[in-house]
Length: 115
Image (tube, rainbow, N blue to C red):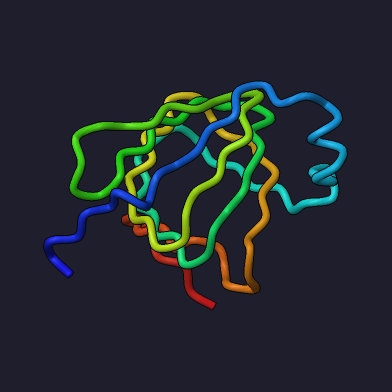
């Protein structure tokens, strides 16, 4: 597992998709999520499709020095199994949905949330 090549785990970005596609996907009925600028370690246990209402992100897949940049108006598909660092330079507000009933990605940060 240490030598994990993520060739098939690529983030796909569609820049400014047509309104007809957004309506077809029924995006405005999806849950919303947001975060402030910062760096977040994320692991996606299910494929996520999201539409950024605002924000700017550089996503660095684990084990790679390359990044994928996306932001306001982009429709993004993040594959199941991807671990990456989100470097958020402009606060994010997005609609999202997962392809399974898995919980949202787990973010590791210095703050702990107790239930």
